[in-house]
Image 1 (tube, rainbow, N blue to C red):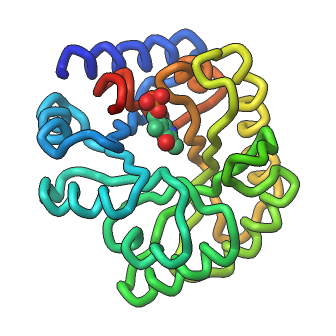
Image 2 (cartoon, rainbow, N blue to C red):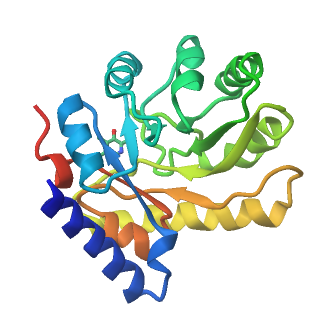
Length: 227
Ligand SMILES: *Cc1c(COP(=O)(O)O)cnc(C)c1O
């Protein structure tokens, strides 16, 4: 485990240096869907700190079992409004907010806990019918609306492009997300400072880093193929 994690960290560092970026500007999210609590603990011992989960029920059981307050949990899966109350309780960052309805419910639940919930807006940059995410053209107006919600802080954008494992085919989508981030910054929306770009997985994270990723979400390269 330590060996695999060190290798990934090393590849992240090389990718960052190769394009003149500070390696510390890229954070590794270890994706632990279907991974046992024991393996998560082993990964934490091997130097992992941020973990990404997709399914709320599985995540809550795992997080409660591991019960280590030093770890940071990110929610990266598709999220329905009726699960918002759990996600707000368990997660430091939600990568997958893609509607005002969902944002409002997260805001309501965060308000009850007296918490400012950090989120990313998930963009369906390739406009795939099967994927979640707001369309590119609706992203700015969604962020404007969310910016008015007091218990949510928008930190950046996330995408799940097609063709993962074929890095050069994915590059244009990563580029498009980075451009969209620039566009949003130019809008100077009150209360909004978009810094994070969550993009890149096992098969394409180096290209994502070259295009500006600040959070890479990696499962298979750390934990092996999922059952
Ligand atoms: C599963 C998953 C990942 C990790 O994918 P790997 O190819 O195993 O690295 C990243 N992001 C999301 C949203 C996922 O669901």
